[in-house]
Length: 133
Image (cartoon, rainbow, N blue to C red):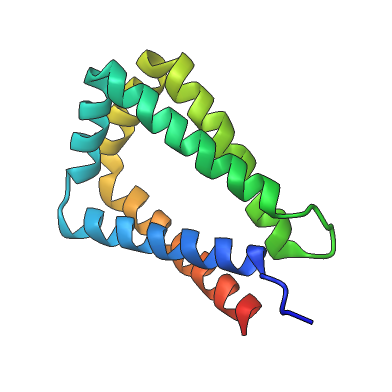
């Protein structure tokens, strides 16, 4: 019988690696996230495309991870997938408010956000690796 794909482990690992990489880029190039948010704020096409991509990614993560209260990693991943879907809907429906909030926060707390993102990504990476081991 074939081995079952560990979707929770893989989704945690891949999301963690992506998050660590994004945070590393932001720490290496201060202001890059603020520029990214400004570009998306100014383009309705980028708002729609980024919202759709995040909705797709969030739905995939949400649907592939079961809610099993005794499985902390699966619950974390399912929650993150759900939050991604909510954020995607906010990006598409309330972009003026949403991006204004982030532009204001990223200008003063860029290093803090990037550092927190790095730690969260590192945690997801470790959880995913342990799950796959």
